[in-house]
Length: 292
Image (cartoon, rainbow, N blue to C red; front, side):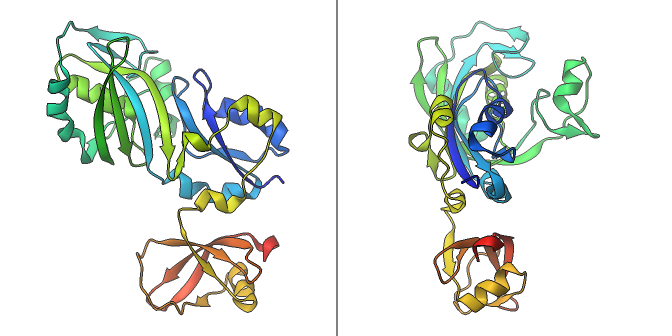
């Protein structure tokens, strides 16, 4: 099977694309994509989709993420993590109470400026390419949502450990940089581990070596297991996979932005749908017609 999901516990030192390159051959397809970049420094949950399952990537890209970050205060860098060039240092005596006193300022809906060393494009060019050649550019802040930040103590290096749950598009490096700036001593990420993506946790993941030796893919619908499901009749399934609307007879109106896993009368996954509540029609967003 070359269509499906595999959950990797990414090691430090690898880019997300390094992981993809290693797994393409063992998975038997060049169509492999990740669903949320992890920096080389970072480790943890990296969902990969293969084959036709890549059509479901948007639903994981939009999922909330959870991280454990080691915040190193007193050191600021150009990349906002410990691998960058140091831009300032500052001796400090910041305590856990000092940090807890400011965390509420970084919780909820906030505007965040991404780091210059990021894959965001500005005028058609990646920011990290601008940074690498020593260029400067204005970076516009973006809205993100921080569900919570919890201080969990300190590690053996004196870094403060933060448990963070956030929306897509959040840069933990920027968050740590901004907390350090708010405390007046500077700060950067010393270590970062993604512990959750959507409903997936580290317990669901395998190592790269394990995946290379046992390239077992989960079914595509596993990538969207957090969505509610709708079962269609054979006639409705034919309409759905061919792009025709299906009369929605559930009666209950849900979130206008809600998507559903759609199954045919043989209980086979045939795609993702959403409801046009004005006309009460179930429409297709992503289809897997070969299974209908």
